[in-house]
Image (cartoon, rainbow, N blue to C red; front, side, top):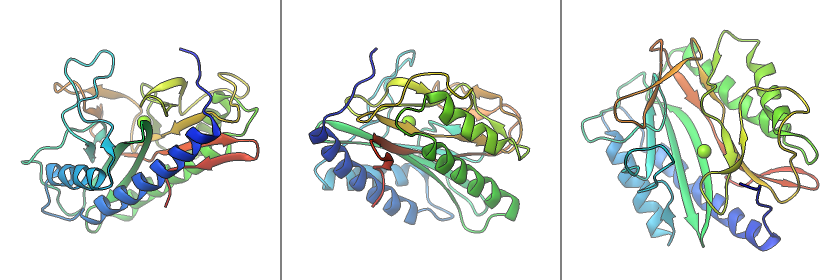
Length: 256
Ligand code: MG
C-alpha cells in the first residue's frame, strides 16, 4: 500500500478530529478510579464520541488476521496487558493498577488515534517512572519525525532513549500511518536504525506509539485474540499521538 499524503483540507479535518479525540480521552481518563469497570470506561468513550457527532473508529473494526470484529470503542489494557484489551463489566480497576486507554475517532470520514496510560489511585514511584519514561519516549519519537527523516530515525530515537533504562520495547506492535483508514502505511517500529525505512514527507499523518515493558520485551497474544500481554507478567505502558508531518516539523493533532 502506498503512503497517502493528505491534502491541507484533510489535515484541517484531522486537526479538528484530533482535538475532539483528545478532549474525549481526557474525560474518559477522569472516570478512572478504583471500582470502575473497564466496560464502563468504554461506554463513556462511545457516548462522548457520538455526542460530538463522530464515530468510534475501533468498534467493529476487524484488522487483518483477527478472527472477529473488535467489540468495543475503547481498548483498555490493565497492568501486564500491553494493548487491545477488550473492556468487560466484570473487569474492575483497583488501587495501584495502571491502565492504558487507546481510542480512535472518525470525524468527517477521517481517523485519528490516541492513547495514554494512567494510574488508578496511588501507584508506586517505580511504576510512575515507567509511565513518565514511556510518555517521554513518545515525545522523543515525535521530535524525530521531521520532514526528510525516515521511520527508522523515529524508532532509533525511541530505542536510544529507552536503552538507558532496564525496560523492554515491544517489537511485534508499532506505529502506523493513519487518516483515511485507522491503519495505513508506513509501519513505524519503536526501534530501528537511523536513515532506514520510509521517508517522512509533509502531508503524511502518522500514529507514533511506544509500548514499553517494565521487564522483558516479549509479548503474548491471549486467547481472546486481541489482548496482548507481557510474557513475563510485568507491567506495560503505552502512549500514542497522531501527528502530521509539516514543512516545519511534526505537529501533534491529538491535543486540545
Ligand atoms: Mg495506533
